[in-house]
Image 1: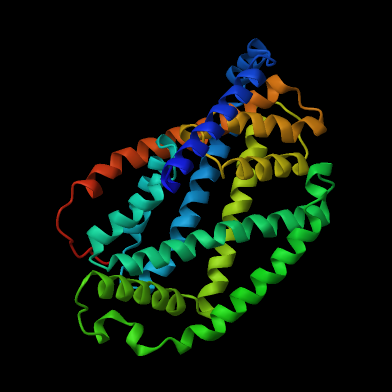
Image 2 (image 1 turned 45 degrees about the horizontal axis):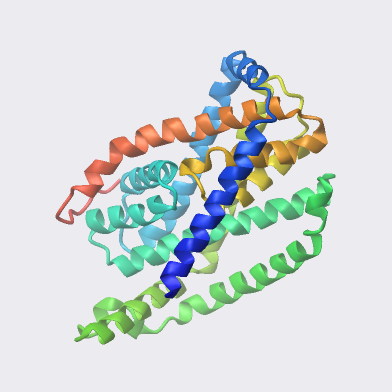
Length: 329
């Protein structure tokens, strides 16, 4: 049995186990109470949560645009369209297919080499776990989180040290990127092996070029703002459902839900999202039915508007055949 088949069976087994777990969890929920909490939720607070959530995605789009601009794709409008389209596709696919799609979108539309666009996306995505670790570290230092998070205190400290060293090293070595790493200064490679090696050199060189000190600061600021926006979305949704959840409760739920996103067993992680939210908020006195109601509201705010925007924008990128230089913004 080859490695790919083993990996497929592992994913199927894990997905099946998660689905069984969700069925057992669903049998314990008072769905009448959950439905009542959803339909009586405050509309103004839900609109506030929706607005904050969309601003969070805008912050992530601007973060990526800072990197794309450095490799020759200066259009903020193109970046935003790709960001929303990718997020929308992520909501309807089991795997994070939207991340790959947004790279294809920008590559086709801007004419920038795929390796360089991929380098921007890779560095952009790197900041999300960095923001998660920073948020977890602040939460552990400032609030009293459930005991399950306490075991992460020292690993988080170590991770912060490693991240700081890595970012400083990248920032200090970025100006030293060799001229040969720039695609325009190299002869066209021949043969698949030479092309593969050239692609990898271009990718690595782009990463080194992008990770400059002055660029790191706004990327970190936008990352923190995006995570704070997510925290505000969770808090507004809980208040809309009239659930009295303290800030640390919304923080614990946000952290738990994002850990659950590592494994996407269902499209949009529907079901497992609710399970993780209920598990994280139980120590704060939130009953399962109310937790499910809030989690459904949060996912509705995150998935429906983004998916509608993303699906509406995706065909423009998917069916475009020729690279077209975008108009400056």
